[in-house]
Length: 440
Image (cartoon, rainbow, N blue to C red; front, side, top):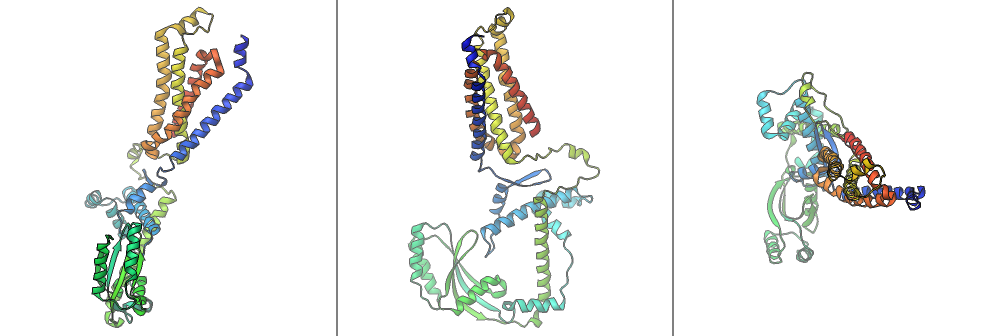
């Protein structure tokens, strides 16, 4: 071994270069995870379906917010409904007593919502209110009986106001009198809002107190008792101006409508049971409970794709690492084919093996194809969790790191690169096979 060749293989130089390579790979994996922070997070696995935060957001847009419902409450309700839908479908379709054929047709047409409503109905217990419960209901809801009233108000719905529009609106509200309002005053205000190009929708509403949420009815009573007859309320999706025009007392004797009270309590109990069932189903899905397979349906279960249980962050790091290794092997293969013309062995057979163009082409192609195939198999196996868009994002830093490895290897091993490159590719390929096998 020549002195210059020996200097290239000094142990301290090799250790330093290896440490740099490992640090670079680790940093790139972390960078890949950071780039993929916007990937949807998995919150539950129900049967063979994965539910992510993106699914919950999509389902949230399909719901109508309640008057006093916040964005967090709306999102939580959407999550519970979505998970409960999936859990109800799984338990009904895999339970020992399958639904009737006509019901299955309805399930196929209406899908999740019909399944959930059917599940809730079959799991709701009959209920009949007692006299004590009726009396307690009357005591707790004076707005429906002795304190019942009819309200007439205008509701103006505002959405996505610019700073200039907000200032114009505040200027117009400042001109409103702190006194009882007339319809003409509110109509004039809406005309000025149109002139100021403030976008809005107006609703003229007449409701009695039993038709309104208790908190909103109390707010209207507070406006009627005060000097200012308008206020601002917020829902999960918009801002609303409420202008109270009139309030008329309309008390009702509870004894005269006892039958309606009984029916109302039955409906209220059914609603409470429904909410409890939905929360229970959703919590079961969040806790990771699986549905027991049917006794005589093993063949269909065998054909289903098994769920993967790797944490998403681990898959992100492995995807970046696999990309780096694949690009590194491609670089090593191209470098090996180019350096193969160099004479590095004294034996005649070894020299002919490396100098032969056909053999170099076959070996270099194999060094490129096999690691690339492993990466494709791995990416296909994790695409259900990360998505192809996420895999592409994670592969970018890995590819950049992998492109740096071949020059470092050539610098470390020097003239033995032609011999070391195939060995390194074989080691990388073995590592890729292990990673791919564990991800399937």
